[in-house]
Image 1 (spheres, rainbow, N blue to C red):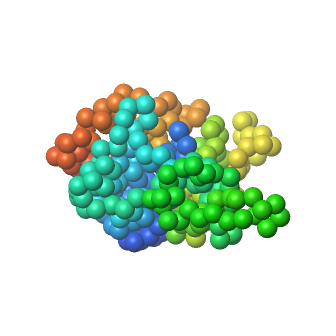
Image 2 (image 1 turned 30 degrees about the vertical axis):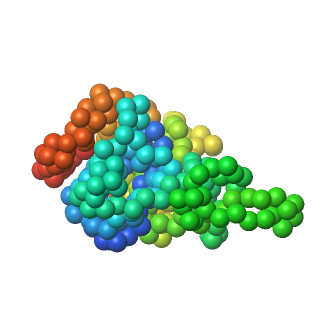
Length: 276
């Protein structure tokens, strides 16, 4: 059952050096506060998994947390490249980072397979793609029923998954509203999980915005819940606050230069103890 902890204590307990860590949230609810806490605690040699690595992984990579990144698209949305990711992959700064690239569909299927306790995911895809030539985890199998050639990828089973959401109740159940990515699957696939939330309420069922089709992550699947107000800024949280589009544009200049990036991390993450 979910335990209520501070974000600092949750990261210290569940994110170990060398761990495989998935941090999910699609477009909004990106767990920036948790990523910054990982940076502050100087976690190292992490394998980071995310369907769309964006600024939070750029920051973690540049801060030296990552050894490997498994992903399906990497960039600064609407702006351009992730310069800290490119610097690590191309020039080994602050150290070399290995990458393993998939398609969105394969990543989503791999999370779903992990949540179901399956060893692999099967999908129609990758035919004619160049990704199998650079990703040795993409295999092709024959359907035993139709003879169709299908792609197969390993299930994603993180050591710990971290997601952000709007609300948790005192029983540890978490409500995810707005665009739902693979947050629920990421939590169910992981050995341990941390969910940061904007607020704690008494009972989700008593909330005026609760409805039968709401995405609920049950408390029994969660290791720790931590309150992190505005925990997804500069991304947004549906019905709580908007996306800070200006910061995404500013990040392009911050991340291009190693010294500028290092100063930003020191001032805005290490010293400030908060998120952008």
